[in-house]
View 1 (cartoon, helix red, strand yellow):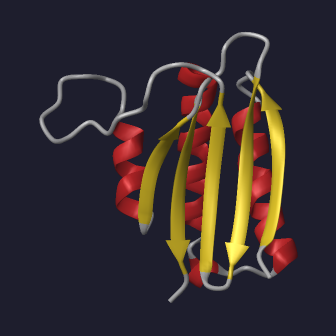
View 2 (cartoon, rainbow, N blue to C red):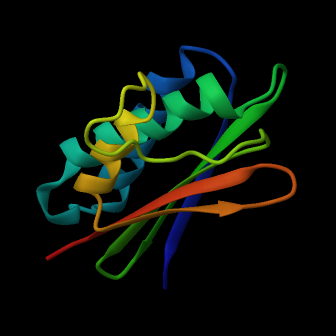
Length: 129
């Protein structure tokens, strides 16, 4: 049976470390080792939460972090109600934003964006070996 937990965070700088702590505390409580990839999880949660705070959450709104462990899979989702769709900046890009998603894409075993009306969910999956 899958384990699932979610928490909402306000559009505030302090929400990024709070989201990271929530994710790691949840995984430890569940005993989910995720093949020793806690540092990867920490970095990816930080990137997704930062993007939500900076680009996805309208003023006065929140983002939602959801963790789901199902067997050997950990799915992390960050949903916000803002517009736009995050994109990964490829090599040679001159832009100063979007590079964090390259890290997420490189570290996670799967990664994507699901568009809603309003908002979107940026998700990633880690597979335990």
